[in-house]
Structure formats: structure tokens, C-alpha cells
Image (cartoon, rainbow, N blue to C red):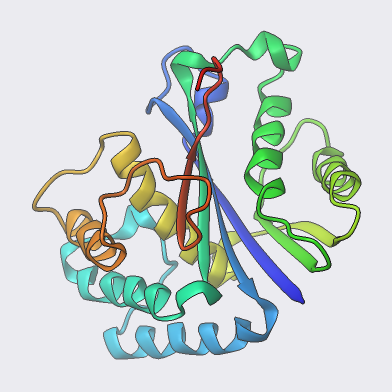
Length: 232
């Protein structure tokens, strides 16, 4: 079966700053069978038309006058059941030792990207992965990530990993929205009573649980809070 994965990130300064803006780096991924791509995009366009919301979809743009539009996007995500899934990884700044990544935050970032993707790649499937554009010092980061994923998933095909500008890819934008919702809870940044809180509450109501680290088997909305210090 052919799948597509759309990825985005939040709080990358966790890997490069001694005083990051948030405690956790977040990398998110939206997974779907490729046959649903055009249908989902068409439904998002219909929502845009309904709410006259034609700008880029971003968590940072959730506001009172756009609340209904963003709630509608949450409902769309939920409506596809297991055919539209989200997974993110949360990396705690206080547990991070960049020395383990050759004192290279960029290298560490792509190691965490690997951990995000690898565990949801299943046997006998074909995957195309799309990442938001990121300025890398080492231009081989994505090819190396693709090679590592291919070598550890020999019965699957990683047909491509490519970076695309998020303002041109609506499914990366949808990933940004879901990642922002998860990050707001994991990083304790949500202001109750705000438009963003209404969006998160709609998602939590549909999922039947507060957004928090999940069991590894959770398939619809998976939050992987990696334990860098080991333990149970």
C-alpha cells in the first residue's frame, strides 16, 4: 500500500540554545494512504471557502475570528478515522546531551526525526515523506535519513524524502496545526479561554482524552515523549 507522510517541527531552538523558548522540541507527522490526498485537500478547500480563510494554515494563526475554521479542520482530521493519523515526538531540553550527537544539534534533530518515523513504517508498504523546508548546514541530512530508514525497514520502500515549503503544501500546514495543539499541552503553553484552547478542547473531546504522552500502540493521535535518561 502507498502512504504519504507530511512533517513539521516546533521549538527547534531546544537543540541549539541554552535558554530555549519551550522545554520540548516537537517534530510531528501526518500519515495517510495516498489515495485520500486529493479528497482531503478538496475538503480543506471547501472549509476555506465556507469560512473565507485563504491564508496559510498555522497554529500561530489560530485566533477568535478564525476559531470556527480551525475547529472545522480538527473535525475533518477526526472524520477520517484511522485513514488520517498523527504522530509526534517530544524531546525534553532538560534531558538532552548534545555531546552524544557529536555536539551537533542538527545531527541530533535528524536522529529524533528517525525515531519519529521508523516506528510507524510497516512491512510491505511504500512511503513518500514530505518535510517542511529547513536550512541545514549539511545538505545530506535528508538523503542520509532516507538511507537509514531504508536500511532498517528492508521489506518496505522509502521511495522519497523531500523538503517542500509549507506555504505551498496544505497537508504540512495541517500537520503544523495538530503539532501546535500537542505542543501547547506538552509545553504547558495553552491559555485557557483562548481560541487555541477551544481548538485543543475540540480535539480532546473527539479523542476522549487530554493531550498527553500516549502508549506506543496509540494509532490516531500518538505523542511519543522520548526518555533520554532510560528507565522503565
